[in-house]
Image 1 (cartoon, helix red, strand yellow):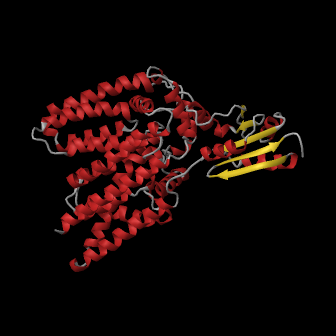
Image 2 (image 1 turned 180 degrees about the vertical axis):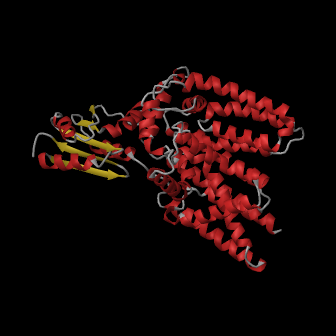
Length: 482
């Protein structure tokens, strides 16, 4: 009876995760820089155009781009159309995560704890309404695990489904190769006796990946720029160098503080993770170790050879795996107590860990970032026909996106600023050339350049309006007077 109640509680938490993500989706926060740059590619190109290298140094799987294009056409001129696929991916991921745990671990306490931490995870909820492929990465990995683990009346159907959906996953997710390699190792270790049938998925995946790699990855024009951009996300190879241990420390802190949404108290779940890992190794749970830990190891190896960065959004798909290990460790500790106290200990620990993630979630919920829509709404109330609008270069992509979908329809002269990192005075010269009333719009601000610009302008001209919101602000200056 207690097991039934725990599973019922897990279903309630799953519905809570759906509700939280739906509220975030409907809140419809502003598109921020990265989203805007990818969104402009999606709405400005047809399907054939999406097969070519993207503008603004963007990179995304072809299948993901096609589905995004479909939804953006289905719900045009709206962020909702671009964000619905990540939202649906999160909802399906919740179900898949629950099913995978019940297939892997016959412990209702572990199921409830892991599902709760998954559904209340700040990172997962945020990316459930982000115009990026990272939530799809989560969905694809869990989908492959589900088809691997589910029971079949005819076991040969397993290999056929894995072959089909594995080939599809290559088109939808950049991390699919990690999931497919993990599934391959699992099959070779657990089901090597079916080696003839294993050839079906392995050969299918190899053919599709080779074609995809040659067509869309090999000699990609954005590769060198990506290597520079993600420079700090590649693991150093020399374990005797201090940089290697710095990398390990900061990435561990990133995983337990940010990715898993435990904030500054990430040490507690980290200890549970170590205990859970110890339990799996001691009990020789090879199947679980392959599925939960091999993706992390593979990603680190790819990172070391500068093939794929190891960073927060790029390892989002690993969140669920780590949460399962944490749940295993926490329940193991509870099991060391006298049987009559275990229920109280579980309720207490479940409450503490869930509360920690909930606190992190509610610090910024619904999530808000670079709220340029709020700034432009303020401008609409006060802008005059002869006013000029200077758009700081960090705000340009989002501004252009909202122009494209006609959320912004200023008839004024628009001046898009250039980037002048390390040469702040050039921003002032750009703005000074716009005589008369000039609005200065900021978003995605680099190195506090807004402070330098506004402080300098305040000494030169009269400031008539100012407005600040989350990571965006706007000012009106009279460039003709002091």
